[in-house]
Image (tube, rainbow, N blue to C red; front, top):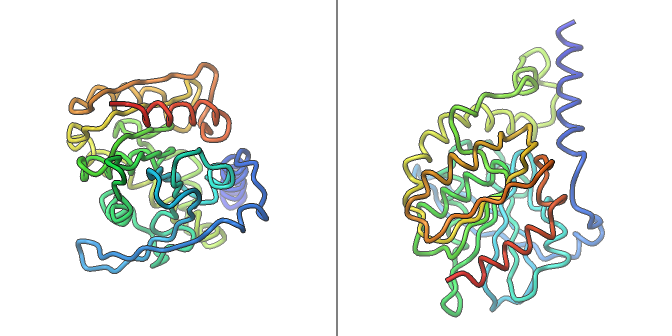
Length: 275
């Protein structure tokens, strides 16, 4: 039946998304400091962005933005074992984790606006931003709208090309009314973000040229969730960036923060020393 097909589809989606992740334990993550920062969106909506932080509070900020679904726990390894010389911040994007209000926010602009108060420059060094999957275009939006407040951008398997933003079969299955009530709230929010992807990337495309910091894109050439061509699409439009480097990883898929962690950390260090 269609109900059974939808259940199988959504279950596969959940298992696929959760099949790879950080090695840090929940007990280790529980020791990490939590905080929130409040702001007001352009439409007057007050929001409270929750985040986890680690490392010295007087060091350069390194801000991690997760994909969909997810929350700051996706970056547990970077919080439990932070890169030396950084204050590491991992956010709960609006609509996820402990951020409030708990409703979905599909606008990349709104997502970026809630993160912007965290863009603090220290010792002449503006923050480095890291975004994975849907966090990639949101990170790019943040950098495009605050070019003087960002020092570097690392995109991990980010989705940028509107032509590639066709929702997957499991997104359509999960949106079926007869079955959607059975899905967790976090999955319903994620599904709405996926369906908004084409319109949101269309809005982002003309903004990419406003990014001025050095940019590195890390992309797996076997990524079935975000087609590898997204990297070239972004690079072609990052015309104002100080430098743009694309690192294509052979035989790698979508889960770069965990499967290519050493490479990711080396690229962050490269951005840290970029001039």
